[in-house]
Image (tube, rainbow, N blue to C red; front, side, top):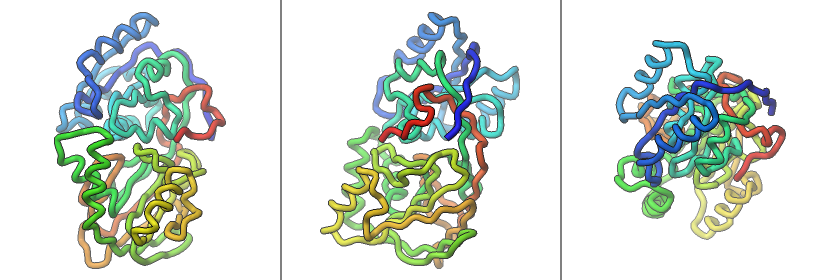
Amino acid sequence: MKTASSGPLQRLLFVLNPISGDINKSQLRDTIAAYCAERGRQAEFFDTAGEQDLDRLRDLLAAAPPPDAVFAAGGDGTVSMVAEALVGSMVPLGILPLGSGNGMAKDLAIPLTLNEALALTWQHDIRQLDTLRVGGRFTVHLADMGFNACVVKRFAEGGVRGPGAYVRIATQEYAGYTPGTYHIETEHENWQGEAFMLTIANANTFGSNVVINPDRELDDGQFEICLIAPFPGRAAPGLLYRLYTSNFDSSDYTRRLSCHHARITVPGASEVLVQLDGEPYMLACPVEISLQPRSLRVLVPPATAGAPPRT
């Protein structure tokens, strides 16, 4: 992992998602504005509306001199949208983790409380991260097919946010879930078989604190396909324990493939449900995955240089 110091940030754009997580956002704008004003920073705001947010943000960034940084104030979906608007540019992404899971912030050791995360406007390093294209769509953190994608779809369709709602849906979904069959081609190897869940991992940790891809980095020039095979109910407690203690590879039901490019086919399917950075999509099958190395600049706490990710 390599980081570079950055000069002072003066003009900051904050992208606010009013419905992310289960946190009251009514005072968020005032809190951010006051924090920046006290430190001589200029705070500007962009509110997401749920439709055409990426296009509107891109238009805003193209219409005037760019800000010194753009902060995503929301969950992993908001972070991914802002990251897509910034990928390939010199403007860094900042993260104020206000979502249900905040997996990206956890992997970058960004504090999960607002005031501590706002310190990135004042003190930070810049880390250049890899990004992915999955079925033509931008992804920076984690994507998956199978069980978790089904849970995320139901979670997105529901009216209740927060970790409790996710756990309840996952419990309900598990009872009737049928694993799928996948064919994976990479530049190194091919694999075919059944999987309970298949994760395309540029990072380590889900927002639920499940460590699906331990000991890998967001800037290591490769991604992993993490497979969980169908398992009997009696094996579930041991498997969960390994996933929560960064021991993914020690299970008989897990396997990882490292690569720079992959193609995933679901036999007989023209489309497949895929979760991308916390949002569900139906993508054309086969799904092509490619990596864009060090294509996104992100603000991280200075103390994280050389430190392991938080879980």
